View 1 (cartoon, protein in one colour):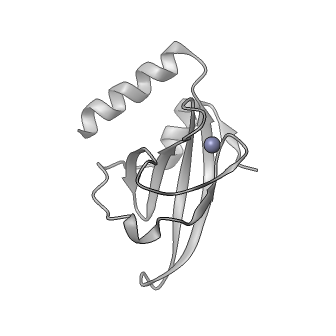
View 2 (cartoon, protein in one colour):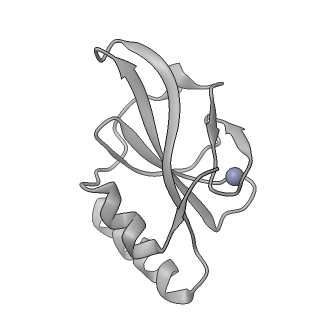
Length: 108
Ligand SMILES: [Zn+2]
């Protein structure tokens, strides 16, 4: 179960955000636990909003109002151990949506 946070806390807890520059295609096919309560496979249809240090922010492929922060678990930065969801948020208010859009605007 992914802990859902209010959008501002979720963004704050993610920390420094960068445009997604990592090639995640090598991790396609691995599942992550989504804020919506289901598991999804990461693939090229997974919309990623931004990245941090070995983590990404992904939009739920089924319910676009759910966002999950996913840790890319690595051993010594070489061996992939799987995804671990840190927390998530649900866009429920117009303000939240605005905040996400502003955030994306600065990253792109
Ligand atoms: Zn989902």
